Length: 218
Image 1 (tube, one colour):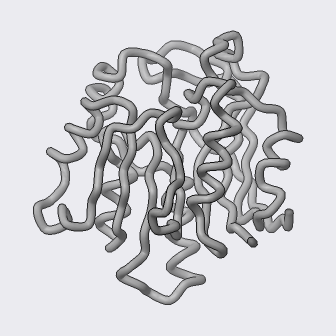
Image 2 (spheres, rainbow, N blue to C red; image 1 turned 180 degrees about the vertical axis):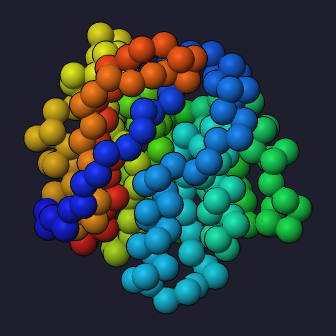
């Protein structure tokens, strides 16, 4: 793993394992995540403009990141395990970009790399921690296989000191394991946040989050 790392502080992450309908309601005007914005900036500075850029957005929810990708001319395969998120996404996009979107209800356990086109960007904003631990390694292998050489991953993983780490239905990792996941990547951006913050509902919570943008080398 090569490391070309920037670090900076960010505001609190507003996400919680709550009823997703309520989450979508609270975040209906959500802006795209910083990691997605930074990844798009990386492409604009380091890649020739290409209308065929293809992204997979895993855990797209109601689509703040997907919509940002579409606005930037990307073709997007948006995935979420909740049908209401996919419905809201489809209702939110402009007619002019619908041809560039494929959106499906697919759980972490159901997602498998087959022979579909490898992506230039695999985006997973605050979604992967909600994969059950017993499925995470298989999911990660499928993610790796989905990214082309020179493609980019952007997203988050939760650390072991996160307040929700008692939840055995979620995946929490130490920093050594996180770096191991990206051993065949060039790290473009890495931030570890270990601090108190707020949830979407305004409750106090301790967050331990790894935010990563990385370029696949092989």
